[in-house]
Picture (cartoon, rainbow, N blue to C red):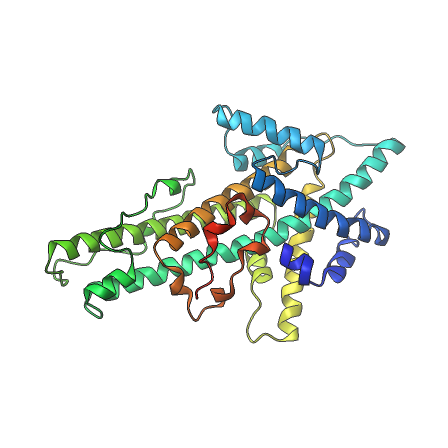
Length: 345
């Protein structure tokens, strides 16, 4: 979001948003400044451990506090489940002049929140793609080591964690999502005819590395499943989100236009979805942002493990070598120092 605010073609994007139903050209400046103010407030709130909507929208802040307290006490199911259930609830209509003015303010806020959500979806999508790339390359590297393409102890230590380090615990990735185990798709063990390492130490390292590979593959699969479900709940398409996220090659003006059209569709989908919920029923909007926050938190836990095990080197030669975590709002729920190794040296 912050990369877009600093460098993006914000004026054309805002101009397109003012063509959404219920909005006018005169709303452009208000939406633009609200986007900057809301993004900055969200970043500060996440950094401070405060509700996402604090100093943005009072009702949403209270809903968030209530639901977080309910989650902590075990009385509330996941945000995604609540979001889906709320979409079946009837909404009330407004008729008075006062209500119409409130509706106009709410529409502008819905447009602003849709813009923020779309930009954060794009960044989170890239993060998950990066995690998937590193997990696959790490698996390939370990298979090459096991099959003797590289067999020295030094290469083993370079390929993963050294024998003196403990394997990071994978309990962070025990999500509630019903995602198939990636181990079934990416077999990690060879047959009995495969070569074995001579020493018990090398055998211990091999088991440790295979366990870590399985952890990353399964975690990346679960992340993708949760992300796809969030797109579905927002009533946008994962295919369009992918088209918004990555520009086709070669990087031409025509392909850039395709990317911008996809972005416009995603923002429009989210805006129309948020518009279904009036000023008295904002729970689904809050839950969408809570789910975005939770998926981002899970993704950055994996990124921390990549930093711990020196695996960002596996992005070499990919589009992720210039990855900048400060571009996103939702990376700020952690210490910035935790991600200083995201970009390879």
